Image (tube, one colour):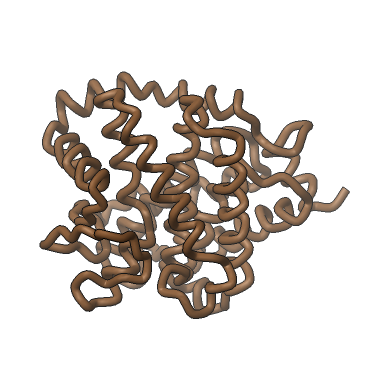
Length: 294
């Protein structure tokens, strides 16, 4: 048994991937009813903002207003026809934000608040449309395939997928289409990874996106090797990028928060099973998350 296979099997027992029952157990333990009740009581403004954005998305209106969005926008823009290459304000950063898909989780939040299936239908519609119009063959030239945005998008899709699977709101065919695209995106990230990313927040956002997919949906030895590589690469990124004072070396609060968020999310996912380098991984990631600098 190769090292990669043995690492992989720590995450995936027996049949090669975590199945629907494991996903349902994970989401059940999140206790979304309690989360929503608590959030409505103590964070009503944030809940209202999520529902507002979800309602805009139902009409294909895009407005990047989340607190830690890397490129916030002041003006909402409605697309008559969805176009993932569009820049509504002439700035390519708008296009990059459009293709990260972090905003899609507002549709999941709105569903849990309202129990209106329309929000889940729209989540699937937007992702399936993206897949149809952004083939992996475009990865070198398309603004929809920039590496940092692809990593963020992978993590965003996986987070939503876990909820739709748990809710029995995704067909086998839809699930396979999305997972096939996620696999293409993860392999693309590995193929385009360069040494410069090891010192950059870009690298952290790529490897955490890869890990999010591979933990839940990886299913063969090639993806076992990829999971091992992603964890080892992330550990090296953390070792190099986090300074003794716990601040990210680029000294950008925004990059620090982005890195912290994705590290926290992937660490939470990693707790679904044992991993032989878990202690080192958590030590470095929680140093970043719990930094006294923020």
